[in-house]
Length: 212
Image (cartoon, rainbow, N blue to C red):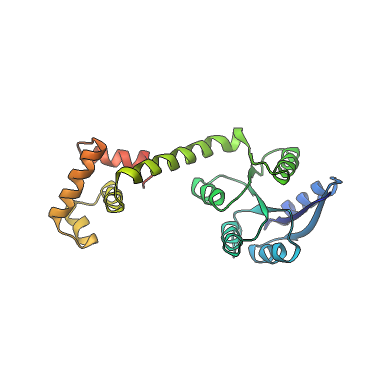
């Protein structure tokens, strides 16, 4: 059985290279080649491929926008993200939106072919040497955020972010339309919960947990 693909990249040379690569694979069938997110979305809806190989960074409608649309429309397609560089926030959102594989453009072509086969078979591909460290950091940050939301209220987390950005109690009070005394009460509770004694410690805590 053939693996049906839709390829998406805004660079003609890359797109042509992908087409040539998969044309040598007898069990892979390329249904469409797209150079922007809009045609990618249309092609997925029209052809219903097994796998969408998607570039993240594109003009007009980027890869993340395509993923959001597919997620909203509940389109069942396995997605592999092909990217030149990893952005933690982009990768994290892509994974949240159901991406099954992440691979860098610098990787050997054979690894991309292996990735496609593994994802098609129901697995995931997160190439460890290049993607693993970033994903470990992302997952650690996610775990820490889950822990933070268990011990701190949304208001307290909001105040931590403002403190970490250098706002004074008075400025925070003005921004959030509360009294300066209320800000002090919240900060006292935060210090108590996190066992922190100063604004400097709180700022370092926020930075290390990815709150800012």
